[in-house]
Length: 222
Figure 1: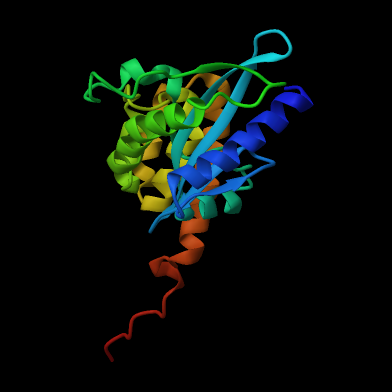
Figure 2: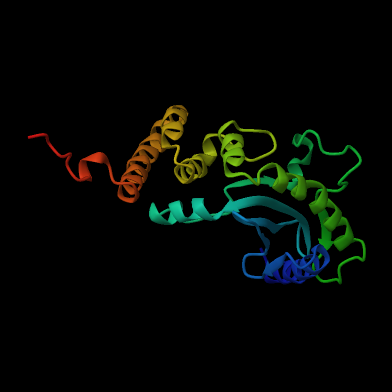
């Protein structure tokens, strides 16, 4: 992405944060709008695909990040990349059940050397409210998010490509047995890495919840 495109998106992000309300804060370096929740954050990430300078096509990702799952990822040495469940505005049609009349456009072609058109921010706010807010409500619960990613639900980016998110969500939920069974569908390369991380996650769980062998021995009858 060119420096002009990034500057354009940074200015746009600040305007969107103001339009969306006080819950949202814009992070310039990551091009992210974030709103805190009871379990983590809702995240909207701006992106721009080059159409030939100085034109870009703007779209956005949106997703839910869970504090407990981020803690697991840190314990396992995984680099946190994006939310634990997410979707892309260009995939709006796959989100069955959204109102047919909205949210309208899902991407916007802009000239990075010009002031944004007066309709751009209102249109993007409408799109965010029409797509991202129902998504955030649907997957506010960590178990619901895990189930959707694992099942490759059309509402999210899921399936085997998202196996690390399934792992950290399962670990945060205390349901590593689910991941062990689910991971059987992974290809050989990913299956080996998943197995190693699963063992590490199980060791972390044992450290936090000592097994019976580490408890005081039972008192014997005389």
